[in-house]
Image: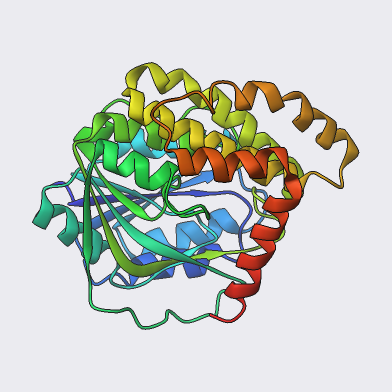
Length: 325
């Protein structure tokens, strides 16, 4: 019989991290899963560690391939996935033993197409999971989820990422990741939300995102990464024709927020700062005249857009508050 869940793990030169990641999957309290581990042309000992797990637990299947990048590795896993539900884990992160049990229960109890748990940024592989409050569900239709993702709150969340989610396999179907980096998760999730009816989000923090200097998001530096993200989101606008007017307005708000974040990150990089300024009119086009964008967002984001010092003060205040929580 086919497993209930397929977990896809792309691996590339993470020998210091992959054992912890795969062990956290092996320790899941929900046991009816297969894990497709795609060794994407690693040149260190990562592939051997993956083979070690497969030799001791038949639920792990390892595919060795020439390097195709993160989207290509995930697509390799999707091509052979047999589970009724699909999850993705990055090979330098680790998960709580109950993560997939919580996600599966959430989907089954609410008949959702996608279930989501919360994530926490950590600095190393030894940080324990903190106690969670009693579980709560937030059930959203398509428009409600786009609003949650793109609009509320102003600070970033985990909605655009794939590794804290469980998807119905039938929802994904023949859809695959686009070969873009960064932004592949964001673009993929836009397509998934456009196809789904119900999304359920839990309040449980069950995923640890390890902040390592050599990761895809960090090795080029924060400023270039955020500039590339902003460019990727402009590409994702090709899906706007499938959105309602309200959803397109929410998407416009997110583009403006990402622009502000990228502009702040790039302000000490003259070359990138000049590129950001060239994007100014394109990003801002139609924002103030869009009837579906609430007035208070036009005022707040507009002020931050035209007065960078206001946005800087907002971010610094949020960072100050975060240090005391």
